[in-house]
Length: 277
Image 1 (cartoon, rainbow, N blue to C red):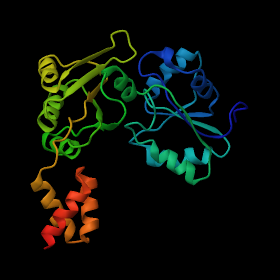
Image 2 (cartoon, rainbow, N blue to C red; image 1 turned 60 degrees about the vertical axis):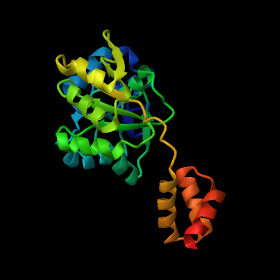
Image 3 (cartoon, rainbow, N blue to C red; image 1 turned 180 degrees about the vertical axis):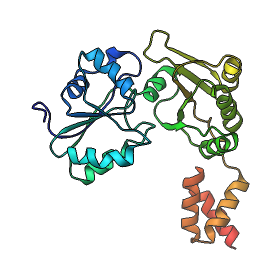
């Protein structure tokens, strides 16, 4: 058992490209962990070479997680178990949450060692609103499923952040333009590496840029939120009031519709009384 760390689960963020981004705290945990659960031991071995050490690693990924997880949780009672992904922050677009859930259920300490995350890094590069954002992970690869997923979030008033592969990037950008309108967007790649770039423009212009030249490397797409919604019309207000009056008295119906559509409550109440009459 490590003499430096308390037994339990440590969620360790690792570099997404530049090894200099590994924090001293993350290095301390990895160097002193009794076991490090990794996606791919070949990738994490490179990180340990950077640290000048040979880590005690065990595979933990989609294909073996259910079988391996109970043993890891049992070890947390007396040992330091670290969890890493191939790059960035574990649990972001990977299934590590089940290990955290089971560790908590077993009463073990869970500690996060924060650090690099491609989604957050891209958001800072794109120059788009950051006060509200929605992380989507990877969209479905098939055309129909992707279109349906985009339709579900079209009205969300937040910047959208998603991951994509180079060969599918142009099709993804085209689908986003079709489903969301031609919003401003950014394509970030090679984040923290020598050739880091974030190309911005409309979704359609970015789709055209990458149509014949799919980029290499890990890619993050950032899409601006929708513009201001047009004000509700009198017909919208009447339809909303008519529905609300089937459930509520005139005063409460007016209040509900006023809040939802951003209209004047007194005027809506007067209209509700006219409709009831």
